[in-house]
Length: 204
Length: 292
Ligand code: SF4
Ligand code: SF4
Image (cartoon, rainbow over all chains, first blue to last red):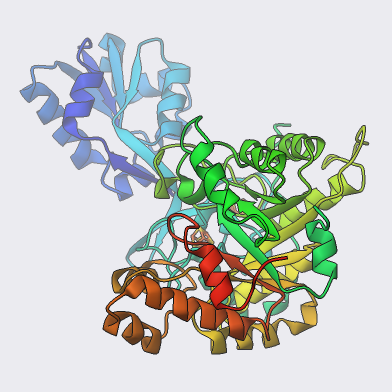
């Protein structure tokens, strides 16, 4: 799941200050789950924009904003999109880009996209993966240091953790403590002795 | 200078290294003056690399200024600000300018410093940086291409000293396996703990230079215990500082006693005072070290 948070209304109004006849596209997957782009949030956005004297021509809620097939598929959901002079997408950055790739009018996003995460046992899990393109998570017991250590350290922790908490944000566990505990539990502490080569950032 | 750091590491001399920070501008006379107090007593001077992520003059440039004054600099190099290209070109430049000693470390996160929004690099970590240095030493660059003249660095790394932290010990082992010539440690206040650390790492057979930060006040000791990873000021030392009418002087006495103990345990001490080195010569003479 892509973790997003809603931008403050003032920021959205600033983005749209020269725009009108707005069409809103929500996202019924991640953003709906996180309440940043499901139906209730879309309806609330319409109310707020109208309160601020913006004209909303209509809205649609595709299954996933990032998988919109074509402009026609949006027309099929709500033909009012033909009147739009601007589109506001209430999804993640990828949803905004996808919508922009099939439309001809200015497209804006109402959310900040934070990380690739998940949710489990009622808890939101952020920064689970940074999509590095070469997955080695198994070498760390299933906990990814590339995404969960702010420095992306592959050969063990920096010297900054205090009582197992991260130097960068004292509210977060140092991921290396989690990796250690997990490898200890699955009896694979031997993996800690591997010298890992740096991550490659090639664009092939 | 009679001996360089590598030769001294191979000798039986108890070593003294000390930390100096480059200036936060282009005027360098004050830190140079500070370093001058260490002439004849410090075997080498570490030059910090934008410590605490606060922007200073580069450690490379200030190391060269020290070299020109006849000091033996140890250029610190963090992974925070440069990718593998930048790190290598600075290492080649440093070597060409006569800098022979370096000390590699991860580096604090930018959010700790004065440019909290700057991009954290960490293309390599400290273990990988040590490997990179050894590649340059063998005459090839990190990509495997031949260099037109390689390096021959005396390269160290840093470590915490808590024997109860297995991850730190494993990382230290990797640094040594990748070629660390020496280790400089976090500040030692608890000599018993340091002794256990030395026992836990004795199989690595690497020279360990123990860190030392003389205490100046009770507040400083409390701050470090709470906020600095790996530092443990024992209660007994806290009481001594608290009860003393002159905490700075008491801090020096404590540090000099610690140095005497460390002489039995480590290859040297690394002095990192808060502020200047004004008291460092006296501290060393209190500990019975009178210079070369
Ligand atoms: S190694 Fe980490 S960042 Fe890379 S793909 Fe696997 S989980 Fe994602
Ligand atoms: S404390 Fe742990 S998680 Fe935080 S930056 Fe250091 S190694 Fe990474």
